[in-house]
Image (tube, rainbow, N blue to C red; front, side, top):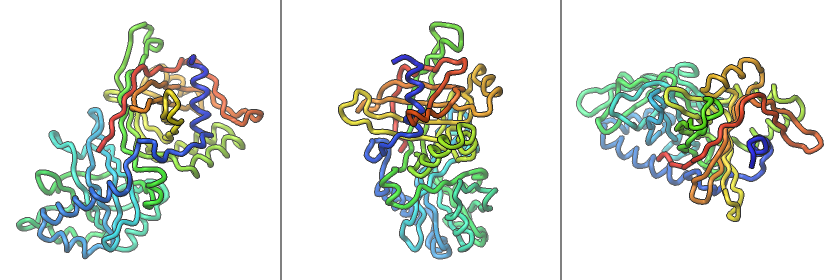
Length: 363
């Protein structure tokens, strides 16, 4: 398949694909996360003598069993969480942070966020976009008290975060800027999964660098799939108002994933996966879309000249989750009324071929 045709297929799937992602092999289910939450609460109880006081004092607790460092030297942290009320899980969330909270040598930690006031919990649950620490609510990080306890004075705050790992309580860790986005109920998780995924890719950047032998190693992380309702909204906008309005809507959406090069990251606002069936050579197709330019100088120059710049990534993977892909930068996007589909015209940059793609799940 030539690059131009490949580029056309990308946005058609991205915006008007109809196959769901259930059972596509790129998600773990609610039961798996619940099991991790149970273990984390046991560890919480073993670690702190007054842990039950923290739970009893709260109207709800958000448990993030494992927030991990996943960045390439830029302090990115990720994790999946469950919100429990009266000892039962009601909703699931995705946690993300661009802060350098983790110190050298520490790769992951457990976080429990206790909501001590109903108003604070309600604002957290009712937030349609991402809920950000320091913007949508203040969070006090718990410190050590006497013995193996949490400082009781900290628990008087409306929201308290308890962060601990192998070395015990991490009271000096900053969670400022941490963001939490609702995945939904167990039924939503069954449909969309709790994605925490990483793809390792080799990009052929020969055309960009003026050489026939230039390649770059990159990683792609996805932690938030698009919903049917969100995709339907984009389709409607594209049909009725065009690419600029789609661009503006995507620009307001939260982080769905990252395309990462050493020292540079491109935030993606849209991620969608398609199971093409067991008879297809490449069974799984993963599509990501961003309003941000990639970290290549020539691409950024193009982005400055257009108001509806998009970056699109497509990965095609076999049953064993290996394959190829392409990155399309700065295309002009339109709508073909006769064929009822997205069209794409490449401006000046050729697509970047991804010659090797492999999948690695982030536990």
